[in-house]
Length: 404
Image 1 (cartoon, helix red, strand yellow):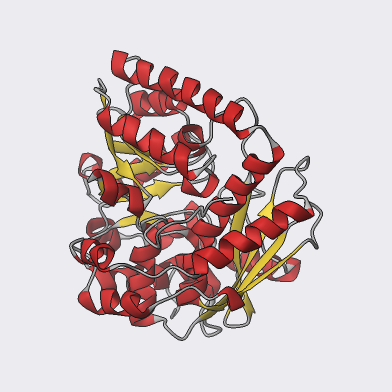
Image 2 (cartoon, rainbow, N blue to C red):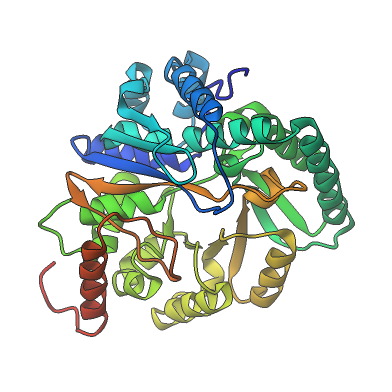
């Protein structure tokens, strides 16, 4: 199989925004990441596993090119010191453990510095997806169904049937293939869309290639590791530590906060006037989007902030119909935007894979995500999850008059 990942820019934009802050503030942190396939009917054959190993070896041979580094340097929130680090950086195949020791037939674990392991997540998931769909199905037939469905979506966008304000493509981690994602981004970029605006893509390589905006700020790993990777921290204050470190790095730039790492209700305990003012908005990634949006609007109003000056970015399992309904509900009450992933990058006649790679340990300690719905976390320690939930419950039921 041809090389799947062809550039180290081929990852989601938030890996660079988090990566810079990790480099400047947490370069000594070490993390463990684990792969999981949530599909119960999917099996990776030994041949697939070998091809995945081969593709990850090829990925680990890549280096940043000077024009890629120059592109990154021209992004206003990326600093020269981080670009110089990336000039020296390389992925390490030695950080990967890839075996068949899992129910689905594929187990992947990465261990090493957070600077390294954070960068592996998105390319690894893209490799797993493409290997699976090329080897488990007739790929040419899948790609034809992908093109047909993409054309139907674009026709509705161009007719104005869909009305979703601004949206970005967020599909690299679960894309059908590199070819499919690029076709989707190119087609959306060139289409004459009515009542909506295609803003950009999370894939930095494609953003550079098509001169569109690379979109993304922070992921759950940021809150989990910053907030829970230091044993001195009370994990119920994870958001405070993560927001504080982010503002230290970026000030008012690059400011979309993720709310559901340890539940949105706990997040709002820390997202008070200073952070609500400094951050341009928040991202929704679990739970009911209408309830979440109403809660965020009410929160801004209670702080004396006009919600129309803030952006709510929705990114949880969206398609254009759901996005249109959400946009209609919030229109005139708050600015909204959408990050749409699998529905753009892997919509074919067969179901997409539901695969993830999550941080499971930081500095030798368990870390966990407690989102606004059950089942989105991935922690190896039930005891730690129980402890974290008790910390969150205590925090929600007590006034914030204790030292952090």
